[in-house]
Image (tube, rainbow over all chains, first blue to last red; front, side, top):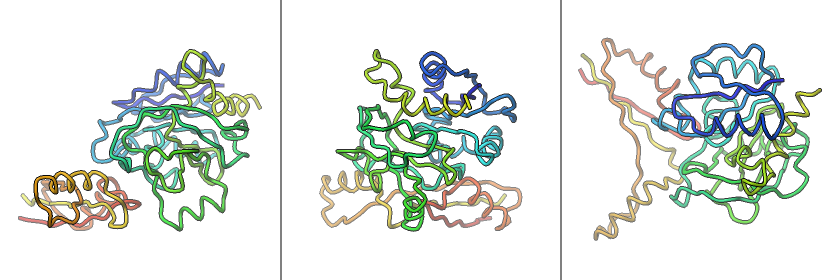
Length: 220
Length: 77
């Protein structure tokens, strides 16, 4: 069982993800450069955070058109696990794998803090283990989730809202949405960083509740 | 060589928080008549052949995100 941790020019959470997956979750992980065109031998994909392509044009816009993304799209459509955190979430939205988009925070500030999250969906591989409020860090300037009313209604009807911010909404996301799933529930995008919350030294181990779903899914 | 100017703007119903910051700075400079500022992008393209269909394709594929943005373009010789 092996997770592909994608690397784009400007990714900067790839090493955190690689470390968390191998050391704390106990699954295999290898880096995959964005110019690659195959995910053969991999069982899941982690799209890491950072500032791919310097956030030029729009966050995640260029990365979502990189050669590896056709393969990620195929992988996702086959129902295999794909997770994108922070810039990874922006990339998955830009790639059309998740509905909606992420805009500059409503409060105009870069926010770097721990947030409290609640899982709304409780059945997907990513959310089934989140049976309580969790505390996970965020660090982003463009994390305000937006989707039009039709898309939002579809998200609610299909149980695709993965996480909501509890307490304060740090970026003005509609409906306090912190993360969403695709229709099948195998693709998760979220602004918080579960890979930065996998051991006590980091201040929280709650990220494991999300990432451990991966270990369970891959073990089957 | 034709020059194409593509204008990409945030959909009007979406809050433009960067634009709001600019508006507030202008108001502090004394432009009290200013009601709102919204920021868009202008992307200039030099093309050997500027076909409307090809330009539209570039906008749809990369330059604008239809979930949050509108675009228009003009071609100057």
